[in-house]
Length: 175
Ligand code: IMP
Ligand code: MG
Image (cartoon, rainbow, N blue to C red):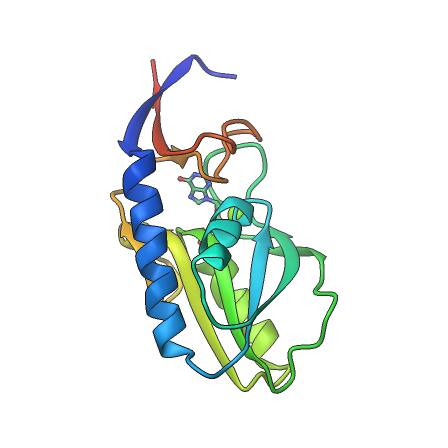
């Protein structure tokens, strides 16, 4: 592993405040409905749990895993589905929860895949968005923070599987 250190980009309080706001917004938008939250493993685990706690309408959680990244910090462009959902989403109000949208490949692939199962509605919520890096266009309905093109970790995001447990968003600075 290259020599590096982590600099804080978004501190713990700011992340938690923003997630609370997103939870309130989603609760208003889905009043009277039940939401099926799709957590994209592993990166979205922390965000999904914090967000779910802030949603006041009924929530069902399910998990899905796919990968487009190897051990490196650059996308391979290949999206592989390694764990499918346990439950059907037909006629459900579905929100896909992502940690970060980078090239957009993962989410555009997942959205197309889930749309084929005929949910009643299908939206996307991401904690972070790096718009400068977009290769594939995707409609994102809820965004926590737009960030510049830096490699970030924490709050579920990893660098070679490390740092997911940081309670804030940090930038990896290579020395
Ligand atoms: P995309 O398919 O290029 O949009 O990539 C999305 C996935 O790449 C995310 O779910 C992350 O797992 C990973 N990723 C993209 N940018 C970063 C980053 O800055 N830090 C950690 N993981 C990232
Ligand atoms: Mg991920």
